[in-house]
Image 1 (cartoon, one colour):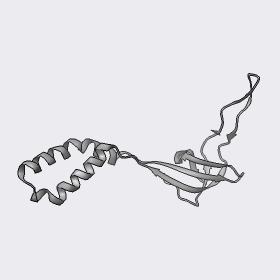
Image 2 (spheres, rainbow, N blue to C red; image 1 turned 30 degrees about the vertical axis):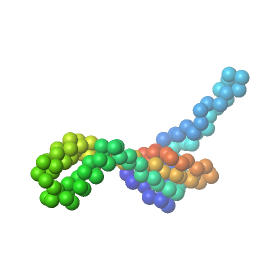
Image 3 (cartoon, rainbow, N blue to C red; image 1 turned 60 degrees about the horizontal axis):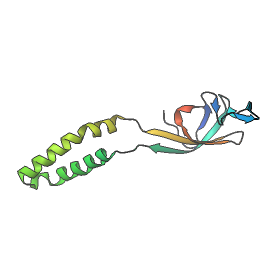
Amino acid sequence: MTLKAGQRVVLAADTRLTDPAEVSGVVIGFLSLAAGTGGTVEQMVVHQEESDDVREYERLKSLLDAFGREMPAGSRRQLEEKVRSLEPAWTAFREGAPRVSVRVRFDNGFILDGADEDVFVPA
């Protein structure tokens, strides 16, 4: 599911915002938002981190694609082997879904920032 900025959403489940508060060793409560609390998506951030192997694959593959035909056979073969060795990291990166976090301003005034988008459903 991909949410959009400006979209109305509700919490899919009760969400604890704080650890339990204690006074003299006695828990007096914690702050939670109830499932169904409505708000508006203000911002979305897509997090997809590339490993060093993924960056190296992109760099070497680009080099091979651009200049491979002009390279000496031995150098080209060496570069092709290196690209092949990095392909599993590239494939895993491409198949992995990026994590999306959102900033939601709730109707009650609270703002929840950096929450995983899966915590919300469209209203």
